[in-house]
Image 1: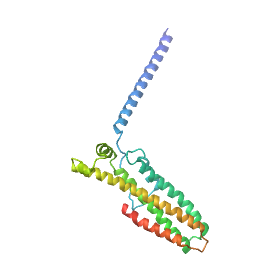
Image 2 (image 1 turned 135 degrees about the vertical axis):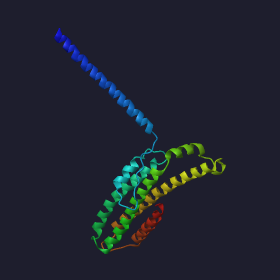
Image 3 (image 1 turned 90 degrees about the horizontal axis):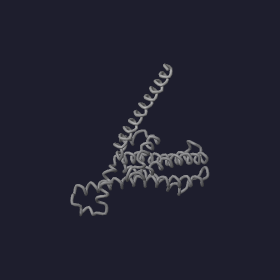
Length: 227
């Protein structure tokens, strides 16, 4: 009988411990869910990127990924990621083509390499600037004001301050779209440059390649205004 009571006691103790652990798990899950609910809709923590310093593509992409589902800027964040990934792919293929055409260190090699590096650096720095702008953009306020004022002429808004704020948010969004468009133009010029490079013989240069390099320089100067 004593042995039976001991077994029952042990089983009861195990059951109580198991129940206590089960309750603790439920409490932990509820608290976690409540904490998550409090952060729904809140933007990720701002992490500034020094666009004039050393920039890591991986770092910029990691930041942009936090905003790929954020209202108003999700498509821009994805476009920024695509720009950096496309540029990395083009860099590999471009230099493989360049090395096949010219010997590294020659005037012709340097001429094309400098032009391409200028384009790649511009894309990287401007995507970093895009990441900063996306982080600073108030998506929640934009969504609220869009519901309130979308389709309304700013001159007809009763509150001039609200009208100015709405216009400013739209202007910031347009500025980010300009960065994305600038990156797309630069990627196109890199495609054209690589295609033209593939046509050249080892000692040639062409008017077309000169035009493309000049366009890359022009785009680079224009993109500086984004910063």
